[in-house]
Amino acid sequence: MSGVVEAKNARVLVVDDDPAIRALLHHTLGQAGYVVSEAASAAQALDQRAAQAPDLALLDLGLPDRDGLEILPQLVAAGLAVVVLSARDATAEKVAALDLGASDYVTKPFDPDEILARVRTALRHRARLAGGAGAAGGALLRFADVEIDLAARQVRKAGVEVHLAPKEYAFLAELAGHAGRVVTHAQLLRTIWGPGHETDVEYLRVAARGIRRKLESDRPPGQSALRNEPGIGYRLDLARG
Image 1 (cartoon, rainbow, N blue to C red):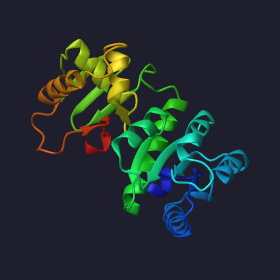
Image 2 (image 1 turned 30 degrees about the vertical axis):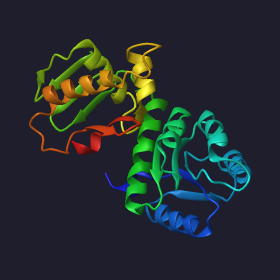
Image 3 (image 1 turned 90 degrees about the vertical axis):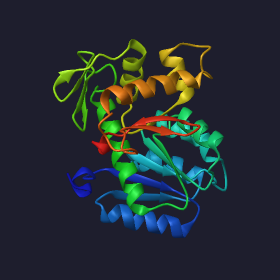
């Protein structure tokens, strides 16, 4: 499916105080078929959110009137998917944004094609949630020859059921419910192992190794759909199928 078809009628709000970046993103997104609006400040972003009802916001954090992290929860609460686009590359900033509900985090400078890919992924995830196809909604997801049936709690490779350990399945199912998005270490550990385990990152490494060994041992190095975002969390990248 082409980006233009996927983008049909989708509205994107570009929030950045740099006119050159806004112009580049407006052109890139417009060429891909998105309806684009712009904001140069946090106040304008909230006004545009109310007036234009966008589906997604590309949000810079270094805004002149407020920090982007301050308005991120308001945009998420209003139903927008939010992709943070910032020059801040510290792990703590990325984790904070993702924990506040951002769908993704891209550091500047950026590749316009990567932005389009991240936007498509965030919008697909938003659509799945709106349709009730999250982790509890019975979605059927595929990458390569692997099929994850969340309704039946089954994982199949080349049509044959694969038995994952309970924590491995819980890990994979949590990522599948947020497919395409980075899920932070703390969120995964809190959901799967419970409160008090938010720093036990080695649990995740062990589970990830088990999943890759059982589902992706035949894939070339670096082509795993189960992607580690160092210091931040994990992502299930279905596009690598």
